[in-house]
Image (cartoon, rainbow, N blue to C red; front, top):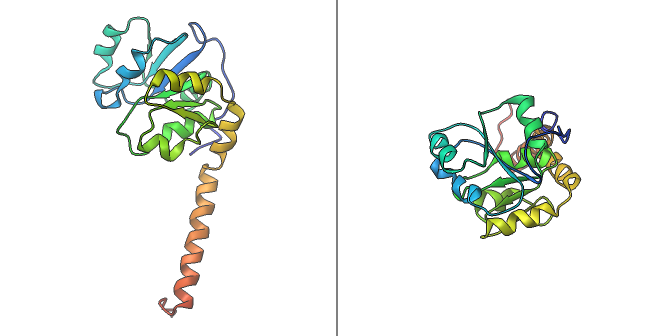
Length: 183
């Protein structure tokens, strides 16, 4: 993940009351966005993205701020301006966007399902709960600097170093076991 692009340089001045709760990804039924938008929590909800459910959700939730899909630095700045990143999906298999939010210093609120369980450091970078309102409340208490520190361990550089270390170990093992042909 690009921790230079996704950073904690917060841009203030997003319209609406604090706290800012944000979702950024494809806007589709399978993302379970209704679970986020139906929450009765203080603050302003933002949905940044596009997809087949956008028109329906825009009509159903007139108090939510809907923004078109953003990319690059504009997206990173928008995420960094949130207080909590809400990830309502129960079916995603990884959720790179979780690490991007953490790299921006934004804690995550999500269900305790496969992608968040694999990515979120519980009580440090996010809160997972079957009640998304409780997950949001818990995430509000977390330190954005600790989220950033955690995300830095998942940068492209860190991933490359881990890959190379494992590749080197695998090469050495095969060489020692006589399974590697040289020349």
